[in-house]
Amino acid sequence: MAFEGADIVKAAALLGAGIAMGLGAIGPGVGEGYAAGRACEAIGRNPREAGLLTRTMLVGQAVSESTGIYSLVVALLLIFVV
Amino acid sequence: MLDLQLFLDVQAVSYLSAGICIGFGAIGAAVGEGYAAGLANRALSAAPDQAGGILKTMLVGQAIAESAGIFSLVVAMLLIFIKFPASGAVGAAAILGAGLSMGLSAVGSGIGSGYPAGKACQAIGARPDMSGPVTTNMLIGSAICQTPTIFGLLVAFMLMFLDFGGKPEPVSWAALLGAGLAMGLSAIGSGLGAGLPAGAACQGIAARPEHSSLVTTNMLIGSAICQTPTIFGLVVAFMLMFVNLGSHSDPVTMAALLGAGLAMGFAAIGSGVGAGMPAEACCEGIAEQPQVSTQLTTNMLIGSAVCQTPAIFGMVIAFLLMFIDFSSRPTHPTVAALLGAGLSVGLACIGPGIGNGLTAKDANLGIARQPQSYSRVTMTMLVGMSVAQSTAIYGFLISLILIFRIFEPNTSLAASGALLGAGVAMGFGGFGPGVGEGITGGYAVKWVARSVDQSVLLTRTMLVGQAVAESTGIYSLIVALLLTLTV
Image (cartoon, rainbow over all chains, first blue to last red):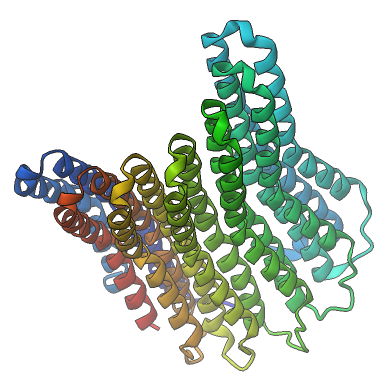
């Protein structure tokens, strides 16, 4: 079976989108889960500061999320732009 | 294009398979024995006068861990020196599947057996008078860890020595390779997981000899549950070896059978490891607090059972891939869709299985320390575990879409790339949120046990945290759905 050059490029882009999003999701998932776990621990120790701790957790998770969003952006670029 | 002729020559493939077999097979035994030696050294530095007993225990434990490596060596030698009468694609696939089954299955058993060996050395260093019961328990526990690799050895021998000559070419190529993958991969988690309760039991028996029978019983229950995923893998491997393939000879059926092997093999890894974690905590807890053994065992059984869900998702997809007749579907892009279906559920299930184990482990530790919080802890554990399952469910969903959607004939490589990409995106994407949300759940249940009156606040924080950690799993789901929609 012979393939056109453009077809190979498109196929590589779409498979690449899958790899980018798939692998890119690993780190934020583990990292944000760990942050949330530690937040639960801190709230368990000091329930009165729950509001502050939840806010800090969310800020930390949002930063940790960024690489996941980069992966999403790259995956969407590979699907729709390339 | 790559010349695939190599993969059809039985002699060439048997050498390749020997390399794969001993290469993977050497990993587990070496890691497990190194761990045992490390803990033996630590125990020796604390109690140098016990050198003789500790060294003996280390060597006995290492010898059991070594057996997984020796099985791999024997199979590799047979693969090198036997002149196999089989020929063609089916013969070559059987030989390659044998190496994969043996080599991969030895990874978990080797590491798993090393864990009780190390813990036993540590325990004997602290309590030399308990060396008899501890060694006995170590031997039982390590022997159970060898079960998965013995299954792998069995399947490898069947693949090497049964006559598959009458099977239809080339479909059986995929079936036999899939059988090797299903068996080998599914054994990894079970071998590793079964080592965890065995190690905790060795320590528990030394610390509290009076509770040893309760601890050993619990270890046996826990290690047995850890074997469930590899038994699923064994069943799927047998079905792939002996299923009646009729007269199919199309690439689509081949992709389905290979996908079935991948789905079952990968999905079992997380469940096997995960199921061992609550059992480990349960053995530890029962040694300390035998009066709450009922609650601990109940919670362990609930936790370990929920850990099996991902493996069951993998098995369901494997069965669908084996038993649906795909032969009338267009070759392109269905081949890529079915391989993607296998990868999606298989890979996406690893993380949730491990994550569930982490949550259930902390729940059991919490109950052992604060038995009065039992019901609240189990409830929070179940909430946390079900949220952590969600990426496994996404993987299952994408697999179902890839299996049941009938694609229009499309010979472009882009269509195939998109569907394989969808499987990869959701498969890998399911790992991180599964593990991460499991860690969150673990901390939450630990603190629910300590301060039950804060359980509502803690559950709420856990759910908020898990929801944020879930986001990348949802991105993966979206990308996977977009990729299937481009076709």
